[in-house]
Amino acid sequence: MFVTQLLEHCKFKDIKNWSKNEVLLLIAAYKEHQLEFLDVNVNNDEVWKKVANDVNETLSVQDLPPIANEKFKTKWETLKRHYKGLKDSNKKSGNSSITWAFYDEMEEVFGEQPWVKPLSTAGSNSTNKMDPEIISPPRKRQKTLTSYCEELLAAKKENSEIRKQHHREKIASMTQLSCALNKLVEHITKGQGDL
Image 1: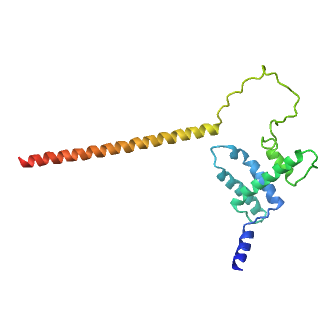
Image 2: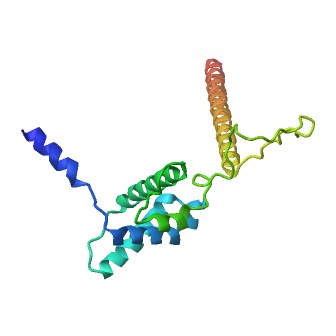
Image 3: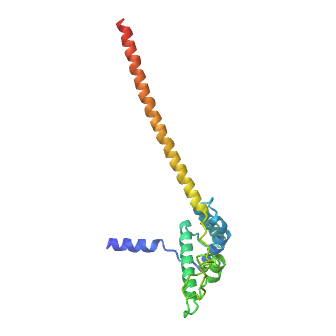
């Protein structure tokens, strides 16, 4: 019985039912900070804190309770998933168009994104046949900034490990040399004591 009560308490404790006003504030705050999310030099968690602060400031002006910071990213991912699902469903022939209260706002944010509207689609129903002589060889793909940064970091890490290994070897050699010198000094002082 206690376990059941505990589960029920935990199940509903962290659920946040967002009002339409709160969702619209979230979308507006996201749009305001959208470029910061794309900046590789800015931590996304910091941008989410800014979004949360903007929304919570507006809510406090309206005498509404604040929303916990960690709820914003989760809600945004849910909105994106729902929007993408609607876009995919509405693209299929035979499906009637489905509407959603936040569709237009999400369309403003993501309408032209490649994950929503691909630049091209692959299919086998094309009647165009290309002449094999005209087909150019595939171009070598340029490295993306992300892959370049990852390679650079990996090279730096490898270089750092090599330097650490050389340092350890140098310390070991110095220790051996020090021991040998100590033995030599000890041997020489013993020899002088016998004279």
